[in-house]
Length: 399
Image (cartoon, rainbow, N blue to C red; front, side, top):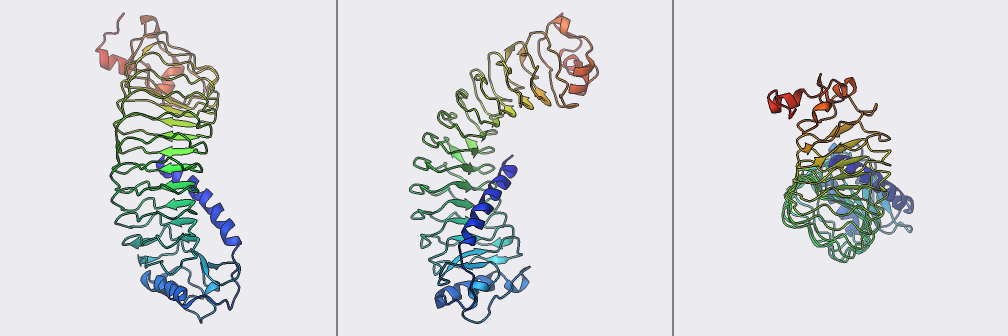
């Protein structure tokens, strides 16, 4: 799910980029400083410009720089304001950007760049940086002083080291470092009141998840597949939250209250060490996926009434008891509750359950439940549906 989230953010980033670029003049015969022209030529040289997919105008006469492919200048055509060379077969390394002090946007995603990300400390006007889907190595440089930064995307590279401090980046909206080899802790997110998306999944991060208090604009948060410990922080006040994924870590404690998260579409907390009960899902009318599987959860499955959009419900491999709640009115296609201690009567299978997408066994259903049911046969992929229970109990249900 981390990769899918990247593309959602990239769509948002493209909108931001388009808005910024449209404000820049690309008039011919512009005069930019020699230092900026030299920086552009260095970029062309360092990244094998001769092999780019598109390089119209590059290395042309002085005064034409604002017409070069992917280059946009400010309103007076006096400075380079953005460089957009994604999907353009850039190879080699990114040179110093220090002389492009008016740069607002830099995008070189989906190329074959190697080496390190250069220092960004002198780019105080930088609004977005996108180096995603390359082969970049080394550490993420300091982002200190980049008060205008709204989007930072370096997903799916080979970056190491720690996530730098995000303090003072009050305009930061999206921060995506998924799919690298980053270690250390997640820095404080305090004060990032405009943060909408944070994705640090599929790294080697450790320590606790920082407080999410005050992040009222947060819609996507993904730190799955790391080595995080501690508890899941409070989600109170995150009314705009759509997607929350902390699965495949070493988190403990209880699941937080989901009250007030009326926009929540997906919550993934599986494969941790969580205890306690599943919180109430009441009021989560937009919930599509819920995953609390492979934990140590106890108690009963809460009511699924009113969850008309629910398609996937995964709470298998816990220590749950009680009955499976009524599934009527849900849009469930996948329902996995096996490997618990559920003992109530088996409810009617929703028509929408996908073939083979559900798991019921092993559970301690009453003897009256172990009868052939074509709907559950189809949903589990077993005929009869309790075949896996037979394998577990070796002909011995608790009749």
